[in-house]
Amino acid sequence: MKSNFIKYIIYIGLIFSFNETLIYDLNFMGIKAGETILSIKKDTINSNSVYHLKSTTKTNSFVDKLYKIRDEIDILFNQKDFSTIQVIKKIDEGGKRKLFKSIINYDSLKAISNNRTIKINGKVLDPLSSIYYLRNKDIKISDIFEFITYDNDKLKNVRVVAKKI
Image (cartoon, rainbow, N blue to C red):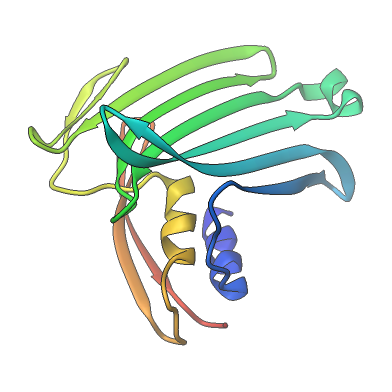
């Protein structure tokens, strides 16, 4: 499902603007289930300019009775190369709550979270910030983008091929 989302973003090919807010309707089996709001703005951390991406997902009152979702994700990433700097995820799905915090230390090449520390080989992107990374590119058909994502203490090699523009 995530790869389809990335293909959609490539297809629309919009360069993002700062202080942008995108609102997505969540549908389940043709029924409106809630919404996700993505917003991005410029911010600073330790005197460095960064992007701050916030994602909020909420189910509506009807779906809440079946499976309530209240997720908040904050991602700070580098303005030049979109590499992840810090992630805070407050996940509340079906009454189960999880808190995930992580800081990426590129000097020591480590991703340090509240769960564990893992070694990284270089720059990593968060799956959500990778959407903005791709939107910032001048994409042509057959262009290939390869990068590594870091999400919940897992690293994944991602390869995206532009098929439609």
